[in-house]
Length: 260
Image (cartoon, rainbow, N blue to C red; front, side, top):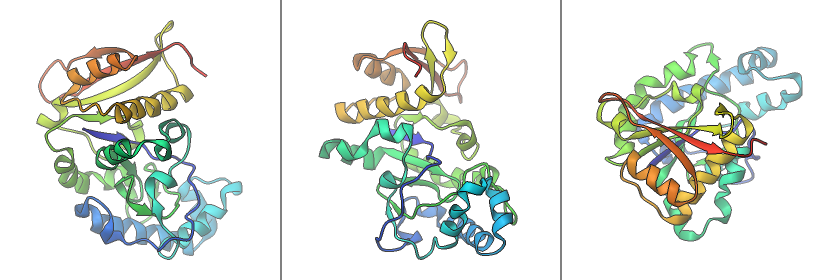
């Protein structure tokens, strides 16, 4: 099972670990593209701070994020699972998983990123600020930039098992499962059960808890139909729509009573 996650806007501090080594990150086919984006981002942030804030979509109060990006090559690095924070990652709570579940997380979780393309939760990265929606001056929109390198790297990472796609729309632009891989991919919406309306904040929390449940249970569904049964066994209310034709992903709705 491969679980595709969005990153978080908020991130923990880099800490005092050894600095980034791009060649040590998972998905080595992305190394060249990562170096290109990293170089563009650092150059932008070392230069005109106001321009960097505008490009990155940062408020005056987040001016410090520009200085942080300028030092990405020398900043301390920590496992990505410790860097990413926020509602989904709080609910997932990787640090409190038992050792077996943590090993499953290391194998199955892949976090998409405007800067790194995608990383495993065990990959050591510095804290940064660069969303997939950013348009860097020399590269343009990062979602579009990443499509070619991702198309080469992700099918291999997906292997021959289930792909559980929990990414937000901006990060889904970087890679779309196609063909046979799409047929064993499931996307998830979280709906308020009484109204059938998509929920926002509780959406992230539900997805984090759902992934935690699967990792803790040691469940390894081989495809979307098996995933639906596994989630129902874990107490989730799930409605599934199988694809109308080959080459399309399954669509799963997880229904919740609470929306706060």
